[in-house]
Image 1 (tube, rainbow, N blue to C red):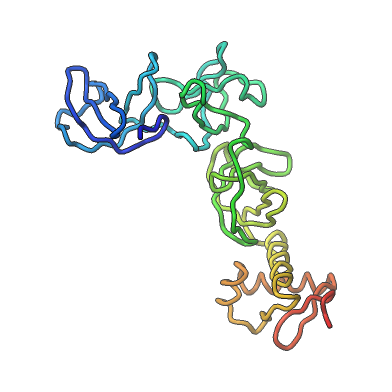
Image 2 (tube, helix red, strand yellow):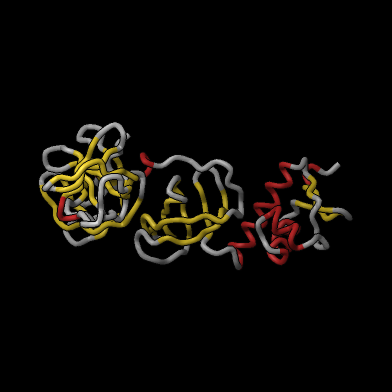
Length: 272
């Protein structure tokens, strides 16, 4: 099936004076002659990006856009007109950011972070600054998990980010440029993903503390890890180094939330 707005693998089925015709088994699409390598022949398999031309006909290009349907990216505004803002996404035809998808005033030359989606009315790729409607949740994440984030919006205390291209999150105290990809670690998962840029210092200790509490709640108040446990086992089960695990334990001891027993840790409020 031909997918508008995505890179796909198509096969050359015939040559013409104005280009090559490719097929997706359900629909044919033209690759214009200016993009054709003379060595390509019928039966050749090509990776191309498909979009609609000015007459709403599918057309292929060997050029790769900065982002395709389902992606998030920081794109430069090349012009602003009645339909909205036009963004440079690496193709001849700029990507439209309709007025209804703006979240703030936009001027030519600025960079905006957007989601690329397929407009159900025009069948054309379009951009949106309203990221939450294009995001969902990530199942199975645990405190301490390592994730990739894209910097979406700078706030006074950190960055609003897109996590693994699927969910919204927040990272305090991280610096970079709009759209830049970075590594972060899960700090909390509810109600919104809270992350830490680097699990060191007090932020890392807090992550270890929270992970220990989570494991205690899942193990009926007892966790068979302690300061004599194998460092590799601690890393595997908590996602933190032994040193950081011990600092997390120290925080919980000071807070009176755990007690150390010969074979592990016990939550004080569940102690029998």
